[in-house]
Image 1 (cartoon, one colour):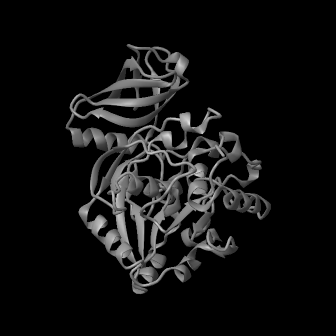
Image 2 (cartoon, rainbow, N blue to C red; image 1 turned 180 degrees about the vertical axis):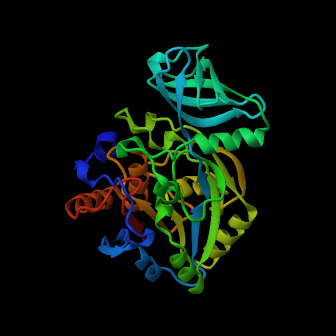
Length: 351
């Protein structure tokens, strides 16, 4: 039976959208879903340690969120414009793909000023989509100084639904503790629940850690707007999988140890680079991998993920992994039990 986008719809009360994280990273709630038995347990995230043993592997996405939200003023009118940096197109000429808001005011040739002394200015050189523009930044100074300026002026790119300004807490909490490679405009949210203490306890237990990099773009969260879900197109995102991680994961597979993908972005990264015999291969490139039922997973035997929005590609992926009926049952239970959803929300472990 062919699945439709509406099969992934459910009623999500607005109060269940997490606007702030749990007080401590590893004290978010954890729903444990067992694919073999169909059982669903309610735990706390730090109980995760009970489900992993020596030589099991957790694969993390070590992408680092950069402060992608800038506020500028339009020349002449001074109108306040939000600029959301998506990706750097050319380092030398400081060309960037961005989204602007409100878009109707921003035309090719307009200039935007970002600080009092006008040391950072951007010129609109092209339109890309309804809200998308290409900007050329004008800045006197080295490339390193330019990037530092973007860091200093930028704000943590919290998802719009939170409806609040990012604060100092967010600079820390909307970043995993293992974030290393800068390039994401959204956090790999399943990883936000890991504390240094929990990682240490897992390490003492003999659990191994592998890292991949997938720089998350906004496309990850783009709603599926077609009823025939196979017609949805994913945006491409940059992926790096090292030989070291591949070796670690393949060794675990050869001994039938548990390989756990921490987050949907990690799952997409590893499923984008699988050899014919189901082993993980090193990779450095782009992926627009779109995983929805039915799908045969090659690498991971378990996954950790947050609770996702109705009709999202993320919900489709976890349904492909755990089975549609079981996931919809788990989600209806999550709503009833008032689990928190989305970026700062609670977590699910699928075994």
